[in-house]
Length: 172
Image (cartoon, rainbow, N blue to C red; front, side, top):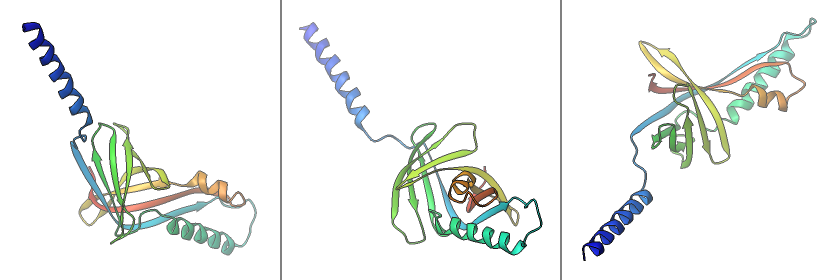
């Protein structure tokens, strides 16, 4: 009889453990990055010989326009991160104000200033920086697109291309 009671108690513990594993993971920290503006910083290498600066300026402006047109989150959009693990969890992205919410995931390596976002067809890493607006230090998400655009435009002497997403979130 006692053996049967112990066996049933063991089964109950195993069943409870299994149920606990299938429950939704609990969020222990959330943060949100509301995007207030998006800019592109483009630097082209200075040519070896004197050439028309207008062509370089036009190329830089074309790259800026390309980066802004392809930005997955525009001003008015947002990223909402729910940490369910120490290094990441589910991500909800709204691409533009009034837009539909997209589900994805994010990963942030503890001790680093970078976050990898994956949602829809987008998969990129942003570095957390800060900028000053009046007397407030706010978060800036900087996405280095240099290698991607060098591959697309091998004819241009691209030194760097960075998409800067300015947020209204205080920098921590």
